Amino acid sequence: MADSDYKIGATVLGLAEVPTLCGTACHSDYFPWAQTSWSSTGLTRGDGFASCKWTFDYIPQAGVQALRALCTGVSAAVYIQTRTDAADAFDVFSANMHWPQDAQDKRVFGGGYSDFEIEFTHLEVVP
Image 1 (cartoon, rainbow, N blue to C red):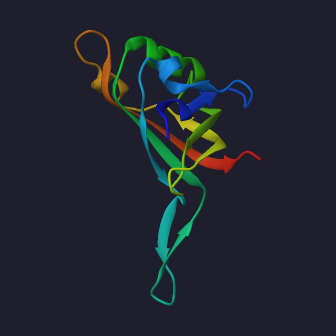
Image 2 (image 1 turned 135 degrees about the horizontal axis):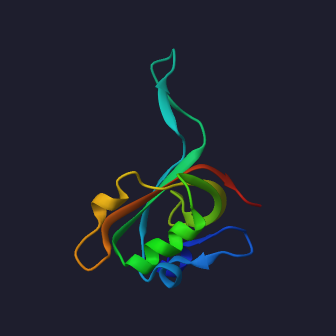
């Protein structure tokens, strides 16, 4: 697994490596379902689309602007390559990218952002 395995783009063929696009690497959390619920047997089950979250410990202003170019509003349809929960395997997904509501709170001295998180929902594997 390399930092360059994380990719994002407006099209599948236009995927860019995150460290190159953003000037820094991210790490991720992958969730194979949207919510859990109790079944009548007392077991829990997962329902809904997979999702993931990318966290940048620090991202420069230029990196935020590059991500903002892909998500000009509150959310946008994008393609990502991200780690799944299967032994560090990566897959390409179509996804909904959601701009963080607290983005301005993450801004630090010098124009960068710390602990910047981007959420992706409705992940569907691209064959």
